[in-house]
Every structure is written in C-alpha cells, then in structure tokens.
Image 1 (cartoon, rainbow, N blue to C red):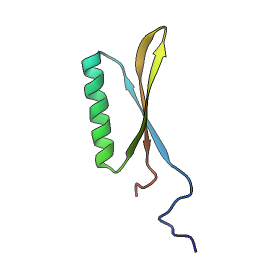
Image 2 (cartoon, one colour):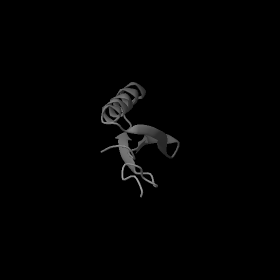
Image 3 (cartoon, one colour):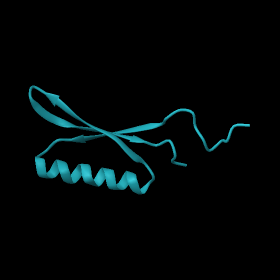
Image 4 (cartoon, rainbow, N blue to C red):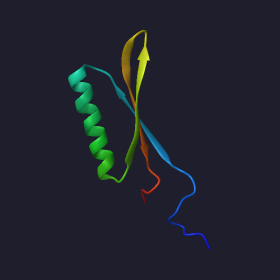
Length: 68
C-alpha cells in the first residue's frame, strides 16, 4: 500500500517579481523567499526575465511537494 504522504511527482509554485532597481529587486526577492520558506516551500530556481538586454523581472520557482 502506498504511503499517502509520499508523492511520486513534484508540485511547483511560481512567483513573478517585477524588476525596479537592483537594491529593491534584492529586497523583494529576499522577502518572497523568506515568506515561502516559512510556509515550507523550498526554493528551486530563480530565473531572470530579460527583454532587449534589460531585466524585466524574476521568476521564482518553489518546490511545494511537502507542503500540506
């Protein structure tokens, strides 16, 4: 019998953080990571969204497999 607490697949949650300035971006990303970590999410990836050589924002991907 399969343990219901164990999942054979991964659940992911994505958050988009709009780019403003380097200092503000780092504060916003830090805040999102802290809030989601407190809720049991694990940071998987941070992907910058770039258009015309400018960073428009960041996509943060969290592994939410173990979150109840």
